[in-house]
Image (cartoon, rainbow, N blue to C red):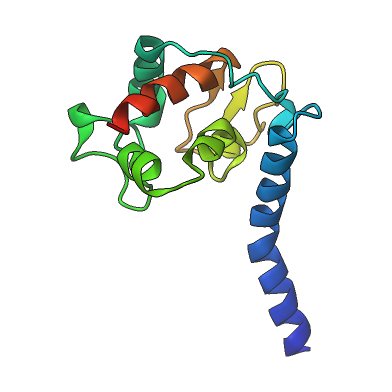
Amino acid sequence: MSRVKSFLALAVMLLPGVLLFAAASFAGSGTGAGAGGVRAGSANAPGDVVRGRKIARQHCARCHVVGQFNRMGGISSTPSFYLLVREFKDWRVRFETFYARRPHPAFLSIAGTQRLRKNLPANAHPIVLQRKAIADVIAYVETLRK
């Protein structure tokens, strides 16, 4: 019985990562909708750095360090935008699919592709972003690579 429980516990821990990998691979394949139903390429259009900075400050800075203005902020368990863009080779995929990565689906959705949970955690502020916001945030984040 304990082997079954161990296997189930391992499966539960690995499943989200496997699903995200599959979603990111599908999104990058150019064959249609990617994670959360966002069409591949929707985040590939040129973004607006100023809008991306504003979105990051308004919505992401609550948990992440997103720039010099909140360099001592964020939650210690969340990676800073600087770390993500400078140390992770797959940073772009991570930002293109952030809305499908935990814990984001608990409180965030992309308009027209996902629905917000009806039973949001008490500490979650619901956020709905337009598809264009993904490209805008990526444009801003690219400025942090320098």
